[in-house]
Image (cartoon, rainbow, N blue to C red; front, side):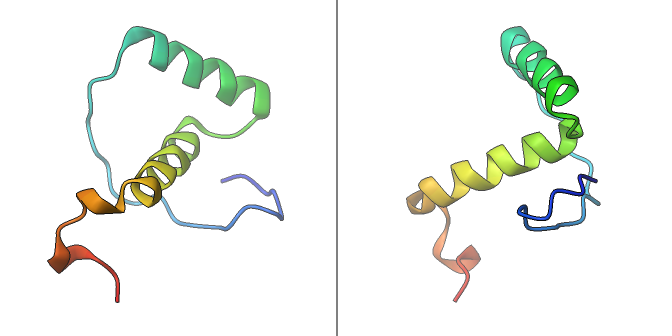
Length: 65
């Protein structure tokens, strides 16, 4: 896990298999190598941002109170 003091720490503990476009996979790999941040952490952060921007997709029973 990254040691960036400005990034909220979280634990990556649940594997999930997804299919993505080749270009997306290549860019994540290149960004990960360049920024020295694990690919899993980059993808998790991107998904958290997507979720926060699309809260209307979250079922009512899954929304945090």
